[in-house]
Image (spheres, rainbow, N blue to C red):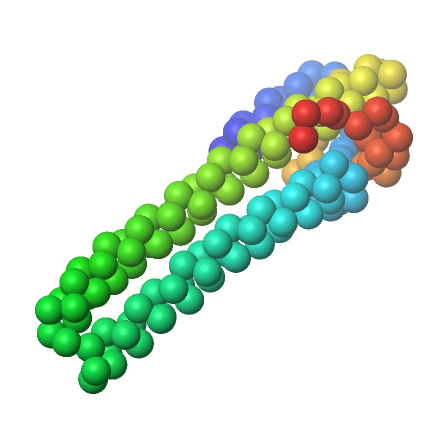
Length: 166
């Protein structure tokens, strides 16, 4: 909706001035080739692997407990206690899975927002340097004379000093 509104504002503005300078950026390409995004993908994957290993360990322990519950040699009192323990632990694993999932999403969103801000700042610098009136995503421009900033943006982003704190 925001992009459509910006497009409408641009079209109205373009009708007022024929000397409009428009730049475009293929954001999907930028986010694919920007080194910080590649690093983030690896970090998220590593976190997912650690969380999955933890969950797998707990699942293995639950499987062992399940075998003891189903063992005909287990007396009824012990079986009932194990079933209660099994239910508690199963609930705990499910809760932990949801917590891990939420934590990963929050971390990913936070890091992606930092990356977006970095990209937007670099777009702003390039646009000012090239004296562009507007910069839009390539997918939002169907016709007209534009300056594609994508490759230049990727190069500048990857050649700048990397952000710290990760």
